[in-house]
Amino acid sequence: MKVAIIKYNAGNIQSVDYALKRLGVEAAVTADPHEIRSADRVIFPGVGEASTTMAYLRKHRLDELIINLQKPVLGICLGLQLMCRHSEENDTDCLGIFDETVKRFELRTDLLPSMKIPHMGWNTISGLKSDLFDPSLEEQHFYFVHSYYATMGSDTAAICSYSIPFSAALQKDNFYAVQFHPEKSGTVGAKILENFLQLKI
Image: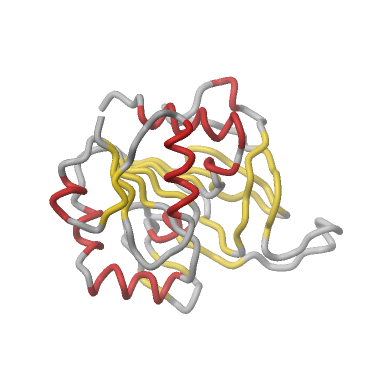
């Protein structure tokens, strides 16, 4: 199986590559359109800021490439947010694969006294609907680091709560995305990556 990790101006690519290596998978970290299109699985990771990253994707025509991919694609963290329709982070129009919008957490210590922004650390997910998950992952803890979140809607595939419920995962057709970091979530995160690699589409 050929796996491509999209290389662009956002961080966290190396840790995803290492996580795949732990599963025995040698991925190509690349921005080459032919190599990405010819892969069996594509991973779109990211840690960064929405507007500058979208500008980079458009400049290098990676936005069109991602939208038109026909094989399973997995967005991680910023990757999930950029696959949504719009982000409040610097009023950014994103890829529009998912119809959800991305909003900044509001500090609500009246609802969650310990609340800090960013949402950072371990939290549970529930309401699993995608074949990216299996029942054993319900209410398991995954590692999150983010100040912005995707709203819930028809594409929501898993829910997390941090003062309010939000989309911990999204799925539409061959596009999958998670807000948490599977590559930093131990054995349950490894299971997510394994499930993605084994998808039958």
